[in-house]
Length: 110
Length: 116
Image (cartoon, rainbow over all chains, first blue to last red; front, side):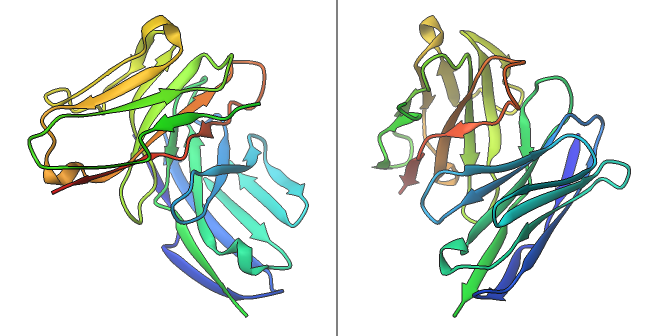
């Protein structure tokens, strides 16, 4: 089985930087994904890590440490439109299904 | 390129009634998933198809839920009879064939079910 843990809610101010953490315990590991989901909409892909280190994509970066079972999503220069739920998901082995965490609801205020 | 298409977007039914959801994946995507998402929670897998074969249906409540993917393209998810606790968003997702990319999932907008 898999256990994926992330904070339920976070708040931040427009223009600031926020880090959303995700810890996981899995029997195997073959990739960690971050998705963004606005209220009432479909989850959309943000990032993918399979090796240790930092992956940067514009204002968003994602970090992975496989030995620690830990990842974070870093959002820079926050904008109001970044208010959404951020889902951490792990693929345990091979090309199997993604298991999602419960999501972190981020509220960006002016 | 068209995304994953689901219908209906919204459905309100009385308990004990049947309901069906339809999904058309992205063209060429062999893997199709049905997930259930409750309010404030992450998506939970119901069933995964590789072409027309259900390869992971361990989380599908088979007493009332059924799914099919005839011809390995479109899929339907059925609930009969529906219960109050089935109120949720039913998400369909698809992904390309193994080995061609990271294996990210592409989601449809979901079908929101309300059981009264």
